[in-house]
Structure formats: structure tokens, C-alpha cells
Picture 1 (cartoon, rainbow, N blue to C red):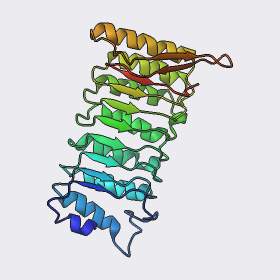
Picture 2: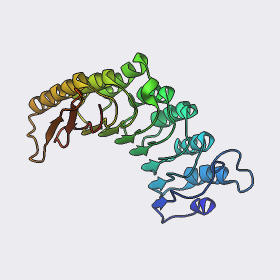
Picture 3: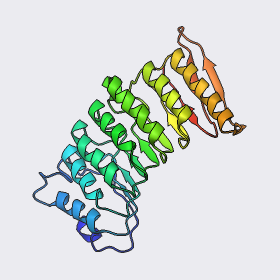
Picture 4: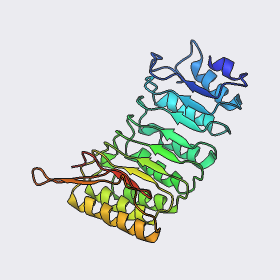
Length: 258
């Protein structure tokens, strides 16, 4: 299939997720069927494919590195999903190189992998200069151990980035400090329309900071709030839950953050 993609001139969307490809698929160890070589060459040669979905395919870090390496020179693929694979922090350098060099990719889904704080820092560094990515999904990884240096880099990158519209960080156990800093950053960012922080152990301090950010955004941008905007404060065990459902300028999703 991937060998055929090198010559294909019509197929624009390929979704092959949730298959039993195995951990050697796309990796350097796949010596028998040469899938790793085929995928890399297909992405380098194909000039029509716009979307590739390889989610939940047991792809390891080696496979992920090969895929991202191929995308550095690709000028057509706009959406890539590696959700639910076995990619870990060793992909950090290649991911940074991709986001710095590729000027076409608009949607990148790396949710439910094993990415840690090194990858979070690399993402933050590369987002400063990236001018194409609009949606970045990083939910349910392992960013909880990221320290102040990573938080500072993330905050700085979101202030400098002028294209990112959707950032999903659900389920990373980021903590209250991240909630506060991301709120302050969102108030200064002019392009972010959706920030999702569900299930991140945020507290009242973070919730108040996010509310202040929303008020600042609505006044500064002179944008009215949609009629569907809902603010729900649910008290329980002295740990209130803050949920903001829909806002025109920024949509903060904080379900189960306490």
C-alpha cells in the first residue's frame, strides 16, 4: 500500500488506524516487509495526500521518528494523527525539527502516547517559530513532571506564536501553576480559540486566573459572548469544579480538573 502511494495521484485522505500493524511497523526493525522504508519514501514522494491517520497502530518511537523525518520534506500533508501509539520522549528532537522546518502541517494529533517533559519542552521551543500549525492535540501524555523551565518555554511560545488556534492538554496532571500561567498567556495570545485543560488537577487559584483571562479577552477584543456560554461552579469536598463550555474568543474546557 505505501509503495503504491509513491505513484498515487488521486488519494487525498488515508485512514488506516486501529489495525494490528505491530510494534515494528514503520520502524527500522521492519526488515522483512520494509514498511519503514516504504512509509518514509511514500511521504517524501507523494504530492497529493492531505491527511494520514495512523492512530492506535502500536507504532513505537522508531516508527514515529521515521514518519516525522519523512514529513520534514513533505509539502502537501496537512493532517497527521499518531494518537494512541507507543511514542515516547525520544521523539523530541525530530518533533522539534519537523515543526521548525515543515510549513504545511496544520493538525498534529499526538494524544494518548508516552510523551514526557522533554518532548513538552521541545514542542514549546519549536512553536515559537512555527507558522503553519493550527491544531495541536497532546491529551493524556506524561507532562506532569515538567518543571518551571518547560512551563516558561510553553508560556513564551504561546505568546509568540501567531497561528495556533486549538491546544488540547487534557489528562496531563499539569497542576495549578500551569493553569495560572496558561491563563495569563491566553490573555495575551490573539489566535488561540480553544484551550482544553480537563483532568489536570487544577484548583480554585487556576480557575480564577482563567476567569480573569476570559474577562480580559472579551474586553480587549470587544467580542460578545455567545448565547451558549455556560459557567458552572460545582462545590464538593471543598474543591469546586470549574467548567467553561463555550466562548467566542477562547473556549476553556476544564472538566474534571480538580
